[in-house]
Length: 211
Image 1 (cartoon, rainbow, N blue to C red):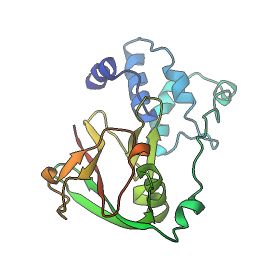
Image 2 (image 1 turned 180 degrees about the vertical axis):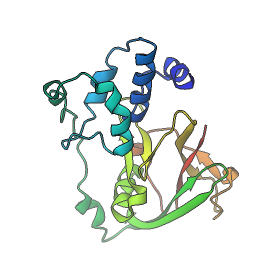
Image 3 (image 1 turned 90 degrees about the horizontal axis):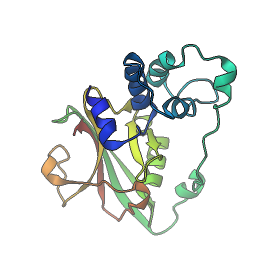
Image 4 (image 1 turned 135 degrees about the vertical axis):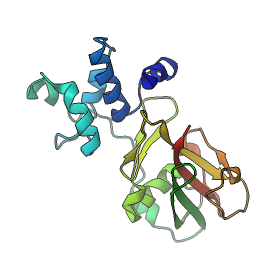
């Protein structure tokens, strides 16, 4: 299967969706993957879910035969990174800059949307995304940080789909064009989004597309 080939190339899956699909496939093949189930259990939320309906649905078959005490040993063990409080990010009194943040769905895009925001000079894209999801739930995102370069694997409750080969890919505008549906106007950004420092007039795009 394609995602089994991917894990051999890219290593351990970076989010609960891919991990659950991989675990299901390995169960069928009676193959074990060290640490995989532990990783899945550590994604459990305080309310018992795994973040949303889809992830919980995918995880449930993996947990068959486990009791509540075993699951409770893992729940809530995730580390919470130090974050700049949203109140601080929102308090923009001077040195503002204007940034456009767009989403494309499909290739070619079937749906597009754009959010325009004023943020403080020196804001990185990770903090910009945190602000954006406060304004519009369609911009809510999930970030995996188990690899060297953090990966956004879900935007607007739409996760990467490893079976269909659809992934969220980040781009920066290559020029002054306002056309967001043409690939030639965008340059992929594959580094850490926390190190992407925005500038006045920047245009950024997350594109849900095959790669």
